[in-house]
Length: 407
Image (tube, rainbow, N blue to C red):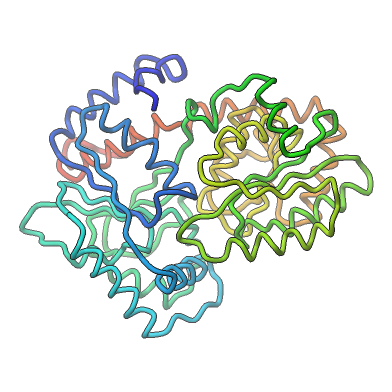
C-alpha cells in the first residue's frame, strides 16, 4: 500500500499538505463506510485504496460489507438495472426480503461512527437504525447512472435516501428531486496502484504472451466486468465491422463482482458472439488481476468503453492516464472524462464507434494527441487525491456548514 506522501511527485506538495490540513479538521471523528462487496467493481476498488490513505491522514476510517445470499443479490441486481432505466418488476415480497436482509445486517453490524457513509442501494436501509440523538451524520453515496430511473423503484428508495443528511452523485445529470442536500463528487483512479503504475515493456510483453496476443499487430481493448450494460457483444460487432477493412485484434477482459449474478451468462454470450475468431481474446480475469489490466491497456492501440449505461466508467480514466486514445459511449460520467475530439471520442452507436475506430487506426498521430490530452485531463481532475479532498470537505460541511461555503 502506498504512503500518502508518495503522491507528492505526481500532484505536488501543496495538494498533499492541504489533505493533511483538512484531515486535521475532521479528526477525531470516525468515518464508517458500508457497501455490498469487498472485491469486483469500482466501488470496492476505490474503498480498497482510499480507506488506508484516510487512516494515514489520521482519520479513524472503517469499512464493512453487508452480507447477503443469492436471492438478495438477485433482487439488488434488479434494483440496479431498474435504476438504469430497465423495465424490471420488483414484487412486494422482494422488497420485504430486501429490507429483511438489511435489518439482519444492521443487527450484526457495529454501526458506530461519527459519519456513516453508505454506498449504493444494497445497504441503503441501514438508515433505519439511525438515532438522531446520537449525533451521527449519514451520507448515501450513489455510484449508479440514475439519469432515467424506473419511477417506482426510485420512489421506494427515495423514502430511505431522504432520511440521510446528504446524497452524493457522480455526475450532474444524476441528481434527483429530494429534500436533502445533494453533492457532486466524481470518482477517481489511483495513479500508484498496480492497475495504473508504470510498467516495463518486458512486463507488458509477458502478459500478452501469456494470453496468446500478438504484440506486433494492432490491439483494440475493452476492460470491463462482464455485464449487459457494458455491451461486450456490441464491442464484438464494432470489431467485426472494422476487421473487414483493417487488420486488428480485440481483447475483452474483465471479471465479475460478488454482488452481480449475471456475469457468467454475459461472458458466455460474448464467447458465442465471437464465433471462434482467433483474433478475439475474451479473458475472464480473477479478482486482483491489476497488473494484467494495466499491461493490456498499455499494449492497446485504442481502448473502447461501449457502455449502454454507466455510473462513471473509471476504465476510461485508467486508459487515458496511460495516454491511450479512448472511444467511449456518451453516457453517465464518461462525458466528464472526455471532451469529444480533444481528450477522446464520444459515440452513440455501433456504427459511430466503428467509424471512429477506423479513423484512429488509420491516423496514429491524431490518436496519440488524443491520448496525451486525455492524460493531462485525468491528472488535473480524476486522481484519488482530489477525491479524498472532496470527501474531507463533505465531512467538514456536515459539522461546520458556516466554514465550508461550497464543495
